[in-house]
Image (cartoon, rainbow, N blue to C red):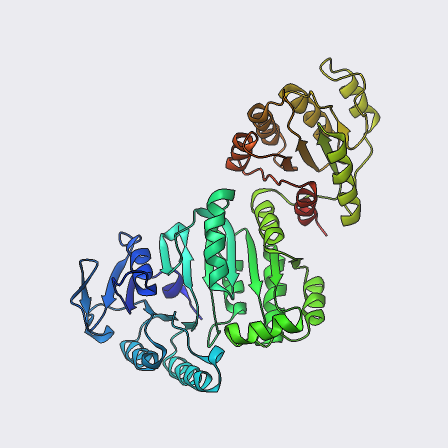
Length: 449
């Protein structure tokens, strides 16, 4: 099925347009108008002649132009009638934002099934109901009631939870990552997670696929889609509903029956998908996969704080990350550097002492990455009186330009005094984590299986 009219619509009709304060409809109106220069937007409201000073239409059939995408945000009991009008209009696709369907019980499920029959018969693809909507930052398309449009990036995010997308968008502005697409799919009356995964697999702007998952409706189809997607791009999954309590919550959330978690866990391992355990880890891994190259197993740790280097080494060993010994040439090259203290560690992790300035970081990183069996680098900076946070960041950025095929993650630990350096690193797509464990976990995701 061709989803071009959903994911790149030239005309959009929004049924449920309103300028009522603090309403879903107003949020969608404002978001759609951000991309008005890219496409034609039509508002539908039979009770108002204008919304946000824009002319409205009494129903979708009164719009003379062909409609690629219809977005519906009206009370559940009205949705069936509106869907009939959309099918009669032969729209290219439908997103139903409205809740009140299968997630509410049998009556809602019956209504959802009637809608599904209509759209299937009319061959109109449907996203939802009970979803946030769809966002494609590259196209300035925000067909959702999310609080803002995130920056462009290489993460394609599919989520069964719209609320999670909202919070993630806000967080992304602070942590500096962007998205190729964000898709909230809700109850999956028609289009399923497998459809969106396969679409992102072929999307040129997507480098890594992230999935927040409660359950799947068609296990065989999901497995096949996941296998195909992983062959092309990394797929990172945050699975909810692992316990009985979580499963019950998922059922009332999107009418999802989660099933035995062990089945999912085994599936992820067999297909090569990366499973994460928290929202923080999920986006740590997505960010590093979007910004850094995949590498062979073997990294070095560079630190100005011995204790943090030991912690990082512990985490790497637990994760199965190899820490090669420094070879004779690397040791010789480091020893020849006049700016190195006579007591530096001469091993991996390489402790360059607390008084290290940016020049020591630079020459040390260069020597470590020159070693053939070192494919990545975790750079740790603890804050001392003399620490040059911004200069250290610039040194690492310069080194990365010389070694684009090798991966770098950083641990600039601290708060307000290290923030300028962190901003510089992440502006140049070098991820920073406040804990060595997070940096090691991110590095693990880059290692080729």
